[in-house]
Length: 261
Image 1: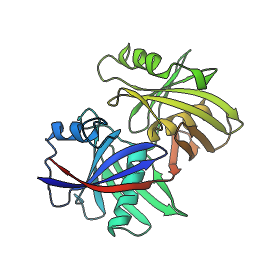
Image 2: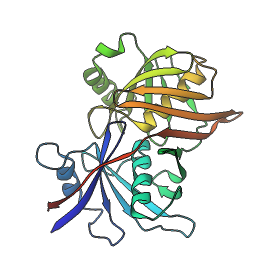
Image 3: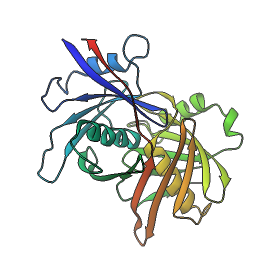
Image 4: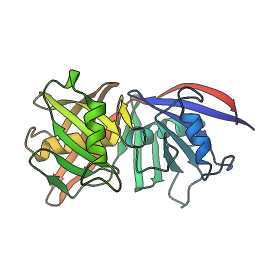
């Protein structure tokens, strides 16, 4: 079979995307997804997404996301932004989208070539002596460090990702350094990729909320610098936590291709 695919990236977080509205590939073909994400023997990507037909009337499409290891994953913020850009490319949407992902329904809007993706509300942030933990569609461990540029993200991140209390499901791990009153730099070790990625959308969201929760910023608009570029997170603090959370940044098509499967 010759499979048509598209490659997208959002601040360096890269994805293989397949228009699967006609069910051309099976969601159970995890070996195929692993091969396609392989940077030596496949296309190469941090993850793979299927754009599928909506399951309910109010949606424009459905998002199915797989990590590079072939396993269906929790929510991917940069992936969601890229899929919105892809839906616009296909003509499914114009500048607004409603879709369902593994963590529920999302709204999105394209403004000035930036994708504004609404994330799920966050009601609980665990504060520990050395770190914070929260779920922004995916689980995230957030810790402050000094000398982020030279920090050993891969090895330290791997130890935390596989250690207690994350033995069962694992966690993404974010290392953060403050840059200014409302800007921070982050490097992220992602589970499923099992390495540092250039950017992580749910991680950036987790960092912005964590920095506000620990009073390292009092702003409800936070700029977060990743290795792949800058993203912005806006939100509203309420009595129960955080709502109206938007992950904002670019999403670009890199190329379209065909691969023999």
